[in-house]
Image (cartoon, rainbow, N blue to C red; front, side, top):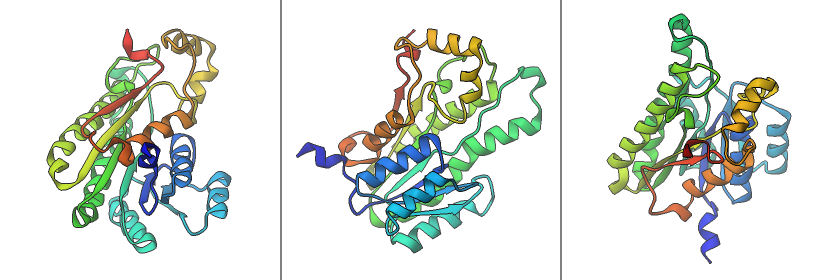
Length: 254
């Protein structure tokens, strides 16, 4: 059955930022698809604890700051120690910030780029090593429609640039590793209900503009993004590499 291609039985996934929002939804659907999951984030949540309690043999969590120098080796090593292999990396952890370009400080720029681009680069670089050794693997980087468009009404040059970099990293990694059994793709979500967007959604003016500019007229849900990531991570997309899948309710169609 073709539906079996969406299964992840016997595979192990490492998911950064897996404690809430899109990351937690990805972990949940991966577990339903049969995967072992190592989640990492700065803090734990009751939802993560519940997922571990329900699947103690297949789900683990560890505290990690993705921007720390030793994090890539630590989280990849912990995944291999716990589950014996690494088949899927989901680079999901990220931060957002907005403000006038001419007033955007070096500190804020560094926080955006270190978290959204440099950390995924370094974690993917470490995760590729065991994938090369086993001759297979799938990397899914979480980008954003902000890598394609100038958002409004918020001004966010640094965030948009960081996500555009993630998209290009995805394309070039895919080219490098396609012949080695490793696929690399990205997901570019639109406006999704999450901790990152909740403040904007709570602002009536921003909410209206975001909704009016989305042809479907609504925000996405984390579970909808998780379904897209499952497709990209699984054998259902076995002939797909170097792609950035846009899931935005039509936002970028105009």
